[in-house]
Image 1 (tube, rainbow, N blue to C red):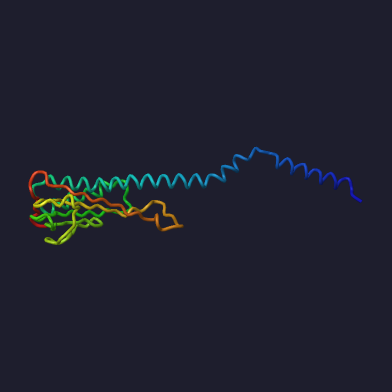
Image 2 (cartoon, rainbow, N blue to C red):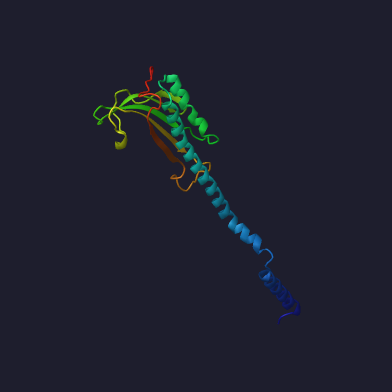
Length: 197
């Protein structure tokens, strides 16, 4: 035998439960809580991708600027070349998680246009200047630039881009190798010698 009070209690619980399920006032907050992590991840990935693209453009600009400054000289010394290379890290500001490597190589193409040899070379790695490839070392240049008795300046700029947000799930995006190579001819002289390189 069921008492009247127990029946009313069950009916009251059932009424409250049905009101709870039919109430739509908090649905927006629940949806926002479910979607927010996805939106936050999309925002961070977009921000990181745009910064990586901008840094890649700056790495290209380093090679272009350094090559342009060297080819405007009629002759250089080691201090001049090192001073020009130090422009590179400054160009990357405000990105400062890794420093670029810059290599300047003066190349002379042989009289028959078949060989390209290093005349002098300097490089900057982690902010420290040093000698590059040894003089008279044979090197490669694009076939279109192998013109007999010509002089070239090659500038290679590279950077290992490290994102601000490291993705734990994959190491493929924890660093991106960026680089650019520029070849320019001297502008004010036939050759650009470096007396103490």
